[in-house]
Length: 302
Image 1 (tube, helix red, strand yellow):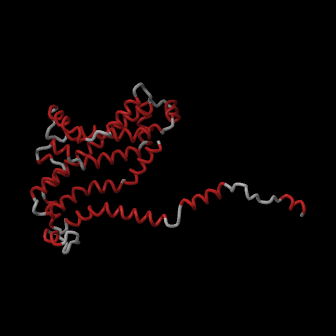
Image 2 (cartoon, helix red, strand yellow):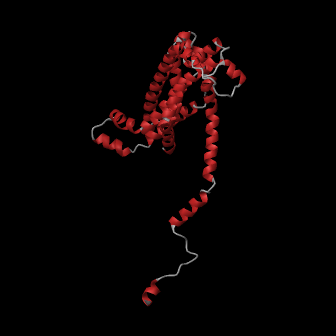
Image 3 (cartoon, helix red, strand yellow):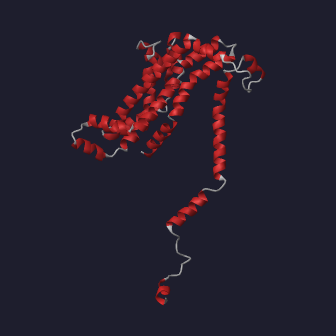
């Protein structure tokens, strides 16, 4: 009994607490009881403020002009479906949907393909001027299309691509490449060199390593850049406005403007056309929202 009692050491008040206890104390101090409700309340208010205009446009398409005039913020009473039926049965709408789909799909494929190739070389194979090239792409983010629209218009006109979808697709790829390269380079740099060495020992060349290893591992970044490019091309307005003059080549943003000018007295139908034109981009962005966030997070970590 005496030996056992002597082996027990009294607690030293000045001794530091265990690491697990310190972590629990810090987490308790860092997360006050009122923090979560306030955060959720602020998030709910921000979401409501962002979704209110979208909901107003969609619901406005189910109303008529008298309802909008008498109660602009009210709900449809009764619900009017004819506005959407008129838009969906018009030949111009589906033609513009096709033009926007072709433009967005080609711009996305071209941007992701070229961006992945450029990012692979910059990230995996150091060469003289590589950092300068990467900084050049980063500087491209600071030059919006608004600044370059006049020389771009002259260039497209001299190349004979006026009033064609190619005159929108090629510049769209060029302006989307900086964002794509900036996001993909950290992904490709994060791939361990041991994988490339192992692939080389197995007889896999650089192109084989690119297609069999790099492309699958960089899928989150590829999906992120692809969705951002698709949504940006779908919503592009300024470039088509300067390049396209034929109504048969109009994309949906230009179609909304033309429809609004033609049916300026029918606000409800204009809202219906606007809501239908933005639904595809909203659906794509909503379905892949988690992949976008994950891709951007991976790019920052890389």
